[in-house]
Amino acid sequence: MTHTTLPRTTRTTTPPAPRTTGTRPSPAPSAAPPDQGPDPLDIWPASTVPLPDEDLSIGGVPLTELAERFGTPAYVLDEDEVRRRCRTYLRAFPDADVYYAAKAFLCRAMAHWVAEEGLGLDVCSAGELELAVTTGFPPERIVLHGNAKSPADLQAALRLGVGRIVIDSTSEIARLAAAVPAGSRQKVLIRVVPGIAAGGHAKIRTGTDDQKFGLSLADGSAQHAITRVLGQPRLELVGLHCHLGSQITAVKPYLSAVRRLVGLLARVHEQHGITLPELDLGGGHGVAYRPGEPALDITGLAGKIRAELAGGCAAAGLPVPRLAVEPGRAIAGPSGVVLYRVLSVKRTGVHTFVAVDGGMSDNPRPALYGVRYAPRLVGRHSTVATEPVTVVGRHCEAGDILASDVQLPGDIRPGDLIAVPVAGAYHLSMASGYNLVGRPPVVAVTSGHARLLVRRESLADIQERDIGL
Ligand SMILES: Cc1ncc(COP(=O)(O)O)c(C=O)c1O
Ligand SMILES: N[C@@H](CCCC[NH3+])C(=O)O
Image 1 (cartoon, protein in one colour):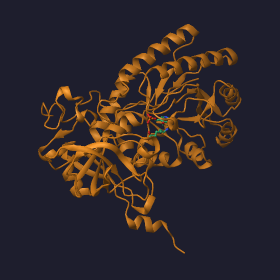
Image 2 (image 1 turned 90 degrees about the horizontal axis):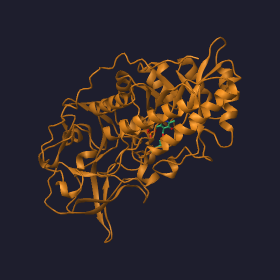
Image 3 (image 1 turned 90 degrees about the vertical axis):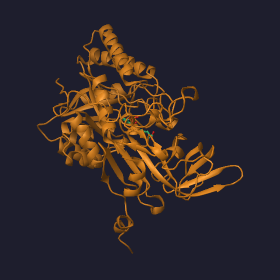
């Protein structure tokens, strides 16, 4: 069996340092003194520089200028930060295939940057797939996922020639095999559930049994699926896949997964006499949403995975399979910032509610997982002491909370600009049309320039879809 390495033809060899690294004044005007905890800017893109009046620039562009030019709410993506994070992965995993998980955030520019950097792409729908391929993303560098792939997903994958399809259920096997044109073979992996609990919230843990993803090792479903796939001449089983969950900040669960999957590779070798050449460990690498929170160290993770894999394979008498990883959040998350304008401030006697012009329609994460963020007033220097406030959205739900119990100046008022870092992943990709407010635009910043990547969803867009009575 053969396997292909992701071509990295367009990647430049020396990653340039972020444009403004080293230009943050030290100490930064808005940075906390060392004895007062971590620097609040630690979780911002590396290009972030404090400006007068509590403004910040990202990619060389002041946030106040971006808010003026593009309106609010607006999502800002630091292109250099995205590229720098891609390169960190390629350096940490030089012998592996790194697939960016499009579900974290995808637009044409993002697909283009990721392709240029030499990564592959993990997609989970015909929509993500078509957007990437029509942007020029090489289909052979794409892996298709999904616990419930529709006929349209599979047809698009086969028509466009994706590199890998990850089998997630037994019923999918015959269906996929039947759709593969005669005379050709589709490379597939089997998504294995190793029975490992990891991830930032119960709703995003996928390595445990009894949830909707993958095929269990414990009950034999994974082994059964392997036998079934091997019986399909139009499918070429190239390896095993496993995705433990998301927002994982420890290395240990990954090492446990490696041990269990190497065990399965050894059993496959024994039972079927074949050596599977690939092992995809999925994504899930956690990031800090607030200063001082833990984040997974990618280079450390890579070294430990490599060692565990080499040791396990040597002990089992197997060659080391080619590794793949699928980071989403750790590439897109810290590269994005969202800007909101304050619309109202309400004091109930117990809480101060600072209501902004976005909300759960552009960021459902606090409502879904209780995630906490670190919003910041930008563009106005306040001399008033901070006090605890709750930043809420504009939607018709009391649970439309963006950040609870955060410190903002006591004179926070309508018209103020608020910026929230680590907003690049799973905000807009999970955005909804709730209350028909329209989804915010996406703006890229780099080298002192800003450009619109995705325009704001207008009332006309919304009305156009509704064909009437
Ligand atoms: C199969 C698969 N790969 C990769 C990812 C990316 O995860 P993360 O954004 O946490 O790195 C996900 C989402 O959790 C996933 O389901
Ligand atoms: N959507 C989740 C992560 C799930 C990842 C997709 N499998 C989040 O916002 O954290």
